[in-house]
Amino acid sequence: MADSILEAFLNNCEKSPNKLCLSFENQSLSYTDLANRAHRFGAALQEWGLEEGERVALFLENSPDFLAAYLGIFMVGGVVALVNTAYKQVELRHILRDSGARLCFTEQERLSELERVQPDLPELEKIITLGSALEEFLTNEGSFTPRLRQGEELAVLAYTSGTTGRSKGAMLLHRNLISNIESLRQTWGWTENDHLLLTLPLFHAHGLMVGAHGTLTSGASAELKRHFNATEVYDSLLTGQFSMFFGVPTMYTRLLLESVQRAEKPLPLRLYVSGSAPLSAQTFEEFKQVFGQAILERYGMTETIMNMTNPYEGERRPGTVGLPFPGQEARVVDVKTRQPLLPGTDGEIEVRGSHVFKGYWNLPEATAESFSADGWFRTGDLGQMSEDGYYTINGRAKELIITGGYNVYPREVEEVLHNCPGVAEVAVYGLPDADMGEKVAAAIVRNDVSLSEEIVIAFCKDNLASYKKPRQIAFVEALPRNAMGKIQKHLLR
Ligand code: MCA
Ligand code: AMP
Image 1 (spheres, rainbow, N blue to C red):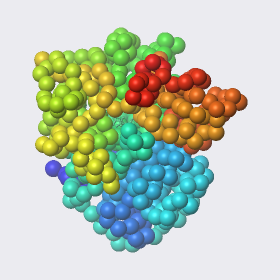
Image 2 (cartoon, rainbow, N blue to C red; image 1 turned 180 degrees about the horizontal axis):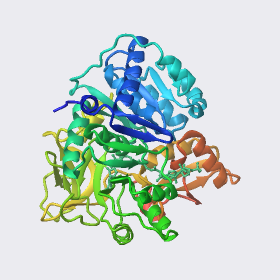
Image 3 (cartoon, rainbow, N blue to C red; image 1 turned 180 degrees about the vertical axis):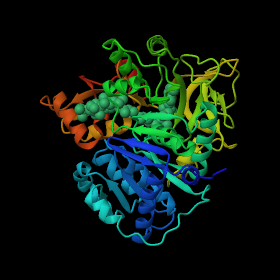
Image 4 (spheres, protein in one colour; image 1 turned 120 degrees about the vertical axis):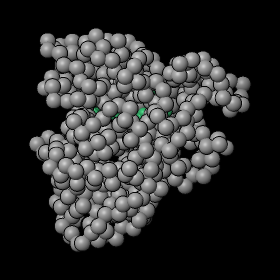
């Protein structure tokens, strides 16, 4: 078996060099096309002097070059730091500094945001924008042989926000990536005949480590889209070309809304998958009625990639995230005693297996806190297991808002808003939202009455990704606190 995504991809390239791998806008790339492009990245990075284990940041939206750069970095033993394209100065400064990236690939439209923080990033030697600067970088192709057999080495730093307000770099090894996707491919019956419609962003685990890894390691193909757009996706589904679609729940609710205006209904696909946030039983049922298919819900985390899945064959039970993937373990423990609990009892979900990350980059204490002595990873998700092994997530031990599949940690937004002139006190919390599942809300005590919603939102958007801005703001006289002085967010809700 291949011991990395790169090796599995190159094996498929050898087996079916001319087979379609990716289509994107007006481009079609065979396995050989993508491998050649990745080689050019690898050769150029080697010539530039990237050493094994050094980090390269990808601050890129979806395109074939995202994947060519990703594979090319692996070819020289480099480590990829993933960066959400919505990030603004606060997140960029932190991630680029923390990862110590020497090089960053980005697009022209993101350059000005990067340049705002560049003076604070002494380790960032080079920024390369797609287009002529990239083509110039890729011209020097010397002799070059990709490195393989690197299973135990670090592959990706995937930043995932934390309770501290600063995101943590989850260290994923090549072994984590390949073992998880192998298990997933077998479970979902992914073969070289599959054609995936991939609209999820590649800078997060869902799009990259499920959608792209599954495609590249199965020898299958995908049509990559820059963004999700319900009308366009509906049109694509009507063509009957696709066998699979993966999305976050917001995408499914939007497809259902789209279907109301359409007379024609898509023929069933082999597989619709939902994850990253809870899929409501109502959406599950409505989708089944309209699209003629039961969505397969699965549960993942950046630190562990995919943990659980409803059965491919067998009952897909709405409101549950199914069972652990084969070869991976899960259990529910008491939040205080950390002792395993019986089926039907609520506790915290823990997972163990070769899919679980190595730890948080440069954060030994946070790493130690997130594992039990015998190697179980504490997910921070609360739930229970049924007598027949299905897991249900019914809460979170961590304070987290999931909006449209993106995570927002209230603490990070609160820290930024504390610096907004006119804000005396602030509390950020989640509220239900029909489109996004949850939305960000804030209660603010002002010390300047001229402070308006518009000013707060503009301040947020200047510092943080726009999806983290509050969509609802209440100006209050005081924040409700308990006897210990802790803000009681449930009262604000
Ligand atoms: C965009 N906006 C949002 C969100 N997305 N606001 C709140 N929550 C969101 N998720 C805001 C933008 O900031 C912008 O605000 C305005 O909406 C329009 O932006 P646009 O890009 O046009 O948004 P959209 O088309 O409505 O995007 C919705 C979306 C997108 C398609 C659902 O958020 C998306 O692709 N989500 C997928 C996230 C994902 O892949 N998560 C996986 C994480 P303004 O105009 O004011 O600036 S990995 C993970 O969770 C684990 C491993 C797992 O289990 O998968
Ligand atoms: P991230 O930090 O982006 O990796 O987000 C991982 C978190 O998303 C998990 O810890 C869960 O809280 C949540 N999540 C992922 N998939 C599901 C799902 N199917 N149902 C409920 N929550 C989910």
